[in-house]
Length: 515
Image (cartoon, rainbow, N blue to C red; front, side, top):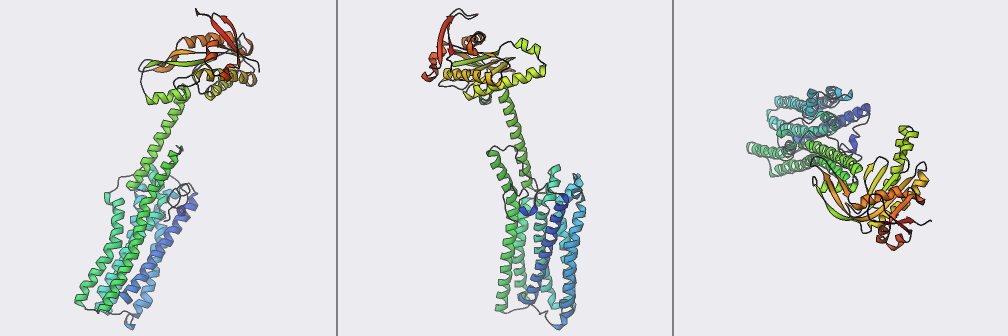
């Protein structure tokens, strides 16, 4: 079960393909993996039994003419029959019980339980074949020579238990696509020993306990039927080496089946850390590790929802305001800030609405505000609110700017030029001013908004009305121009003083120089 990147191996191994691959291809893949892995496991087990009985385990030799019928005829016939029944027919029977997956429909709870228990069921089927072989050959050899019974029974038992362990591991691996489909309807509760603990204990039992038990039995029988030290040493070395080999392989398979789900979650976390919130891992493990995969998917779903809310929230109130609100949720009140204010208002909006269909008016306003928002954001400001056919933009709050006045003036010039080129159907007056204002959350605890209140806001609104009557449709206060850097000041020329509507003090005007 090789480890691969979970971008290309969502089931933990490229051998298992993709969960969404065609049902026919998936069935062929599963049947092939199951059949050949079980065939190989049974054949290797049979060869090990033959080697142990004939060469390794002390006791009467079975390579005599007395046992010729069993060794030359009965044993090959039974091995071939068991392989066919256990591997080929057993695999077909397994897939018949998983017909719901091949019919591409969700399983019932009963079908889910059957699917998740199928590795154990298949293992018991293979174990039954070895148990039949144990009875058959123990009786067969025992009838001819009763002294062969201990070593035949011990060898077939130990080999059969180990083969069943490998059969479980390979079946559990091959049926991962089915388990993934079954777990789509939820993760069932399972006995503790059927989970990760059971896997580890199984690997320990088959890789360590079985060879040790075999050696203990051989030691006991050596007291009953003494053997030479050389023969005993050969037996210990053979069984010990075989135990090391099978134990290490079983532990490797167990570790891979444990690590694969964790690696899928780790890969998913890396994708989320890189900003891919559409990440989800395939849940194919019915143990605690599957619950980990399910938990990750729930976490990713929550992050997607939160990111969606953050995006929508940011679009409604502005990214900077959204970030400030999330950092200090539910805080009412404001603070005095030095800000620059830009107010833009369409000329003749009433006539525009009366002369065009509503859908056309909305499309025009969207084009108009798209230019406004782009230029404000490019200058590090934020659009505080839309007011019908007008917009209020703030520079210097909630995020402070070193050059708020210059940013607002530059945004106003570029905005006027782009509106004339990209939205020639309408004209808009743009007013810019700067000064001290109160910025913060205004309203009630249940409903409030971030806004800026103060004289600069009122002055900018009045300047936008005045700008509708001047060349270029842009007007600023001289005070704002004086606060800007030299390169921005050079782009403006000062005009006359005028007392704006609703204000008692005169305002000296400034308009952009002609390019």
